[in-house]
Length: 502
Image 1: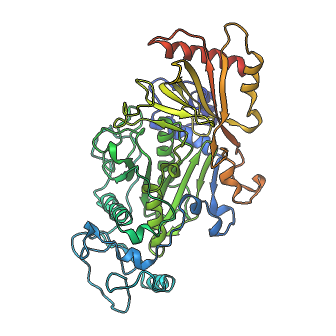
Image 2: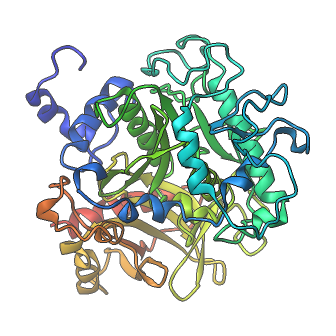
Image 3: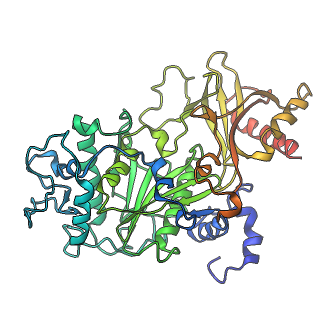
């Protein structure tokens, strides 16, 4: 589809690109995903810069809660956790030189790296940042070029290839910087007390291991600059099913040009994560464009790109972003707290699940079902995000088919109503349980996050926005229990859905 793609071509291939059809033969290649994204992103994207909102109303502040960290705290963070180690932030720039401590050029410019400043001392970070801005904000890097810029990867190289990008140490620099900040916030009790949340006991780590070698995927090879993983997965082979978040960077200015490769690359990677982890509520990632940090928020109703913040003059907010993704509860990454899919290191360790379970899901009464298999999962991006599971009640051992999906508001209870009406009819699946998935005590829907703008839909750029509610429905297919139950129930689901959709 790369040759002279037309709207008619998109029309003809729409069933293969949408979530309603099966994946095309050979999988969704880079070219197909590129066309899919062009089609699906249209009318589904909010650039906050177009809303005319104040920076305080940006979604960034919901994704990244503000800590009470000050400039002096960031300036005291060092590499290698040594008191005399190189500082991560020095004289108004993030310092990537981990080999030696830089010399202080101007003693009057207090970096906060020395002295015995009291933790309760008055903060002057605002005035200091203004002074630092006037000095200019470059990057101190181990690389002689000291650049963030490079060509974005186009997804055409073979998986495992080491070729495709210009030599650069920037990704490794970012990985080491994130590691140093994470360590300080975890281990220093005074810094830890500045965070607006309790630290999660689920350990994660940032890695640049795929900056030059694509994450294995049979159809679409992509290279995240720096990616976030569970620490327990460190020694396992990784796929997009393991990526929690990622950061992309470029020297190009997002505010001057929207159609950047980092924009399409970030959207492609978000799609690949959602494809392999359709049980995610949303995907949040970051881009650093011309030293401006943007958050990219992707859910089942669209994509939001936040107003930027300067990484140099707002170091505390950069630290906040690292902390929110690395140290807070995984729900801040878009993981649904009512569902758990096992990673290799935790399979078989949950004694309250049925033998052979690959995860669990709970309803609003805290009843837990063991997930025995994934029968089908959506391939779309802005859609219902349907996942069908074979689940087992650990108490009585009965198995059911469970459908987890994001339904449009006007069809919120359509399927449940139909299944209630056909209750008791022979050879028709029976409704067992259903519930609106709750988040923070409210029915989870995609409008909540956008309502915070206070901008009517008719004044927003995402004209194709569709509010979607998160629901779970379990059904009993009255099928025999066997190793082939999954296939049998899948067939029942397919028939029942055709009945319900009519």
